[in-house]
Amino acid sequence: MKVDLSALAFAVRQLYAARGYHPLSTGHAQQLIASALGHGTLAALQASTDVKKLLEAVHVVVDDLRLNARGEELQLDSTAAALAVLDVFKDQLPGTVHRDTSAFVDALQEFVNEQTPNEGRVASEIDAIYGSVEEVYMPLEEIDEDLDLDVETEALSAGIAGHVAMEVDRDRPYAGHIIDVEATLIVDRLGKRLFARPELDVEHAQQRWYGDDRGGGTAKILLAQALAEVLGIEEADAESLDFIEVANESVDGVLYDIVLEFDKTAPPDIADKIRALHPTLSVRVPPDFFEHVHRPD
Image 1 (cartoon, one colour):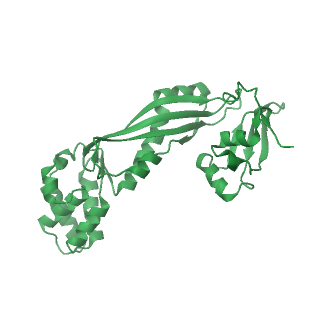
Image 2 (cartoon, helix red, strand yellow):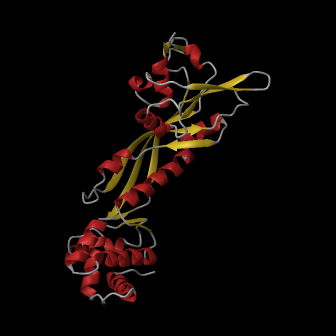
Image 3 (cartoon, rainbow, N blue to C red):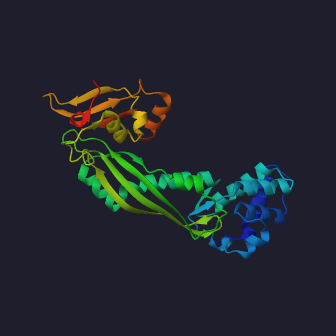
């Protein structure tokens, strides 16, 4: 398979004209391609190795702002011109083409979510719990907020702290179902908007045992503090919470665990914080959860 600037420009010209617009010149098509790949000028693209690297790129991130601006400068229908370039890229490039940086971040987040449970340390912890994965919470907040592809670094990287939540196996004694995970996402850069296959390096994965931070489960703490721990919110927010307790028991009366439901009682702003980690506004706690807390009279 061969991909070069001339072939891409020819395809863009054909597609733009086929959609009912005045034919593009070769120079204009090439300028659009240069802009889509993040270059300010055609000469800058030609001076780079980006076109040669297109076949190696696993991810191609279109510079939508620069592309649309160039279309307007050339007095074209900028939306149609940008769409023609995007569609040609998707048709002719072997990597995944993203319409903008936001779509790229979404793809990286999906990669992290899919990869995390399969990484060695995390997989070992999952095997130890003997359950199925219920939720992967590994937010790419840092890369989402700070990602600027105009800053040319050799690689993109982001530290991630989150967890994997497991479904509780009620046939086994309950000790915890959250695996805390710390990892680093690394994506090597091949060109201005071209990237290699992402890699996820898991530095830490450990099951969160209830009672570990309570002096071996013997020291009692305030209810608000206990709720803050299991919900992942601030203690001040937990102080205003009411909840319904639902016991999960066997037919013989053996208590497996307790579900705390906050759906009808939590203030809206605090409910949003809870949903970030617990979409159903409920959380499972061990059967001895309330033995470790001081409950209000």
